[in-house]
Image (cartoon, rainbow, N blue to C red; front, side, top):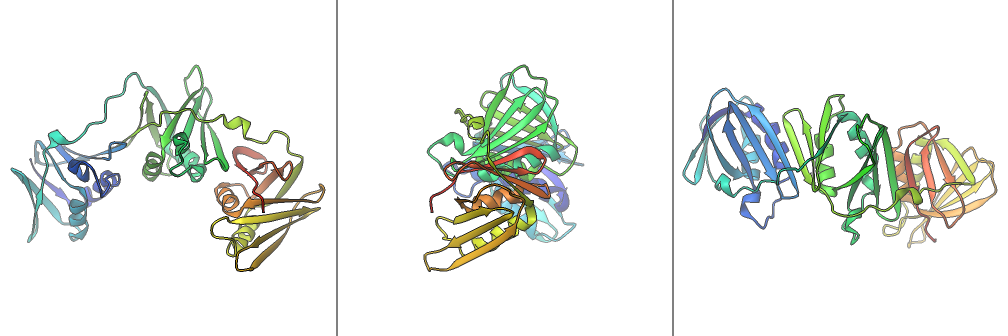
Amino acid sequence: MKLIISRETLLKPLQIASSVVERRQTLPVLSNVLLKANNQHLTLIGTDLEVEIVTQIPLEESVEGEITLPARKFLDICRALPDNANLNIETDGEKAMIRSGRSRFSLATLPASEFPNIEPMTSPYEFSISQKVLKSLIDQTQFSMAQQDVRYYLNGLMLELSPNELCAVATDGHRLALCKAEADLQIDETRQFIVPRKGVTELVRLLEESDTPARIQVGENHIRVDLPDISFTSKLIDGKFPDYNQVIPANPTKIVSCDREALYQAFARASVLSNEKYRGMRLELSPNQLKATVHNPEQEEAEEELEVQYSGEEFEIGFNVSYFIDALAAIKADQVQVNFTDANQSCLIHGLGDDSCKYVIMPMRL
């Protein structure tokens, strides 16, 4: 294989393809990125066997061939070269020679035949949705995913397809985030699939705030998202997601509405003195007033009082303050509505007049 390419053309696609490559791998070839030159294109592929990213770059001149190079070293070389540098890459046996100006680098390679391919999808369901909408759905829910939970199906984001909408749901068993967006999906029945945490993290990095469509294919075991010059594939988690509708409080009796930013700032200030492990916060409600109190083992205390719209009875409840802050940060509305039932039941938070995104937080004993 032989090719000439500019540093500016190569750098970003190489960063994208290398982002999924783990530093420590059981298979040496998984530390490498696969380069394929053919039909005036250079294809770069990185994978960790769970997630695969493919990027494509047009080439002016090249000799067809394929090889794998150490992803981190190759990327660090490209970063270290000066702007407007050209790279001349040529393979010779088990070595790849990279020349640029007066710089020369000889890298060990591994044969492309050893590089794993993700199995092809069988009869996938296909649909398209704008990148901006998909990115927003993930951004507003992904923080509620579990981390290394034994209930493996919680360690990811559940996407639910129904005829007129796409819904994203994440829960770690203590809180739940749900977001819906209108989508014209030609589908007969509701379908659910769970994308693992790493797949979610990598996908949201690739999506842009644009109306350009993302073409999505969902198979039995994989999801593929095609973007301009980038193809993303992730394994799906094989498991059944819990019925999230049963978790959402149905008939709250105590309804509070207030300015989202003011509530967020008050809780953020109070959280400074919270117990680092338990993050407990006591909320006390009285007509048109909310009081948040936080204690820690050093006998320190923070107290915040806020004017709110509330006309119910006096009421007290405890929560993890971090869960509240995460939910308030994700809501885009200026005003929020917080719904309570009693001190032993979860609360429901959403934008005032907008329940397309809902956040459920379980109470905690203080």
